[in-house]
Image 1 (cartoon, helix red, strand yellow):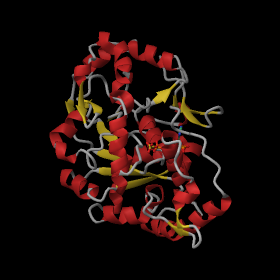
Image 2 (image 1 turned 180 degrees about the horizontal axis):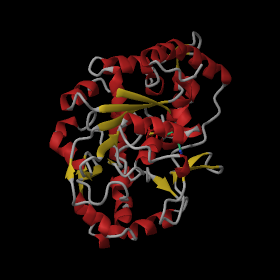
Image 3 (image 1 turned 60 degrees about the vertical axis):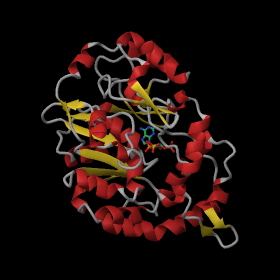
Image 4 (image 1 turned 120 degrees about the vertical axis):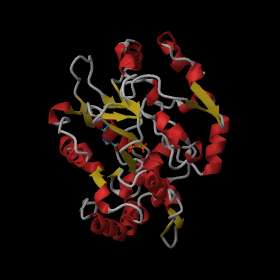
Length: 359
Ligand SMILES: Nc1ncnc2c1ncn2[C@@H]1O[C@H](COP(=O)(O)OS(=O)(=O)O)[C@@H](OP(=O)(O)O)[C@H]1O
């Protein structure tokens, strides 16, 4: 029903339910309909952040209505969903016409991680750049949908003209064992971007997201420790495991040299978005188009947002699921986790040649 509601306002723009296929009780957008940078539909996330063990994921899918994948507009919002809908309804028709130009190419760069690092903010900031064209939803090709084949994947991509970069983001790639080899098989020249964030805060952020979907979730503390008496950390808990960046990076370095990676500081993306965007644009060989003049700090949101672009009626902040308030966690638990991560962080700094200042 939610899906139906979401699509209805767009029906008069030629968008219909036949653009979706149903797989494992999940509705998936068959192929891009409108311009990837602006389309409402392509901003539907496919299971974004559904961080449950496989069995629970499939349970969650079974118990959810088809429309439940329409979790959020992962792009920006003005704080007024009606405005958002109206804005999309009024999208000029020339956008869909323009989309017929160019061709669909495999991405030349992918934001491969990390979950809750700030990957959405980075992608949305990059999409302001006229030479960047990106898929709004997370394709999850190299982890979940690899058996669909490369043509399926390429078809998800927006059309690009000569000189434009095609990109996507799927943060779970960074921790997927098979992903480096699969990406290498596609292109050994691909540029890989990893947004990293203090693994302790990242774990809390990850937990906060799961809690928002499962209110009965056990406490952060009880999930963190395998044994509360010995203080042994449960590294099988994904919220903990994802933050062992050095281990995951080792897996990637078996296929790609370090020069193929850019590590973006999730913290600096918040405190100095323009500075971090400068590094990203340099890495991608792009002109520095996205600069300080595009950002302002929104006091209410507590994060940088995009100033209202030329010709648009509103400034844009990320949606409600980005920048959630975190629950209070006992300082002892956080300290113990910090101790746990320290050696892995040091190793990661050494491997990347960058000190992220988490200790
Ligand atoms: N500009 C801006 N606005 C809002 N939020 C921002 C921004 N920049 C970075 N962040 C941080 O991004 C965190 C979510 O990370 P991701 O987008 O990688 O999450 S996800 O893996 O795609 O679910 C999100 O984590 P939480 O604060 O825990 O919600 C934010 O801290």
